[in-house]
Length: 77
Image (cartoon, rainbow, N blue to C red; front, side, top):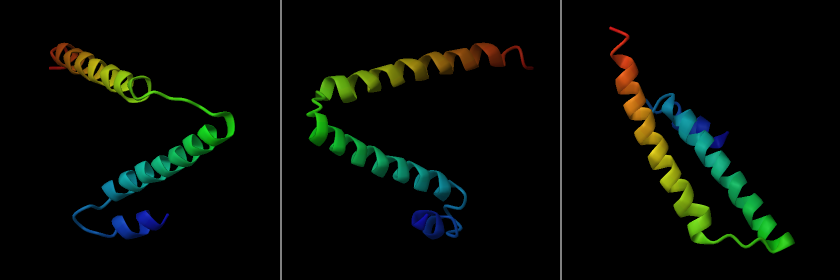
């Protein structure tokens, strides 16, 4: 809420500030949840399983989405 009140009125940022504030909010909630899980149930997440694999998946999905967009945009005109 505070980031929304700070970022949205800035003319250069505008409504994009709401998106950034939402990302920050979810990052804070995620951090609290992970810290609690690690403390409570001794959750062990390796870096490769937790970061590398999702990043690779996102890259593959982005490439597929881009080429799908290019192929489907031909039929729009």
